[in-house]
Image (cartoon, rainbow, N blue to C red; front, side, top):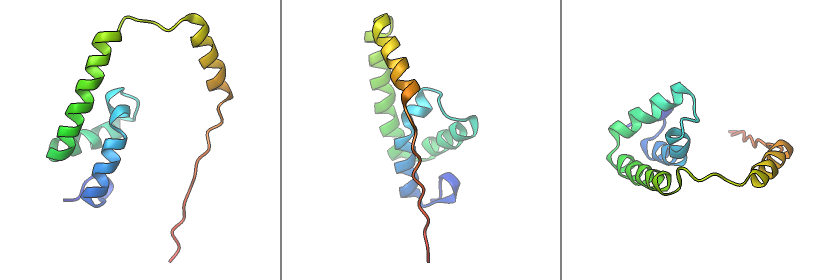
Length: 95
């Protein structure tokens, strides 16, 4: 079965599972969400894994949902995130 972007199904499962938190947190594009949702609808293995991820996230939300980090911690994290330099690795496949 071909999945995301027409790639091999096994590869797609790895991609989907690596992006499941982005999907759950609504942190990916709408197009990506649609592709991931379609894959989850069609793939029992990923759907089972997604169900586990979804349940863990729901449990954490129920247990810690109304807790807030201390103001000082949030400020320190903001400073660190502002200083963060994102590095992107690209690979070329040469024949």
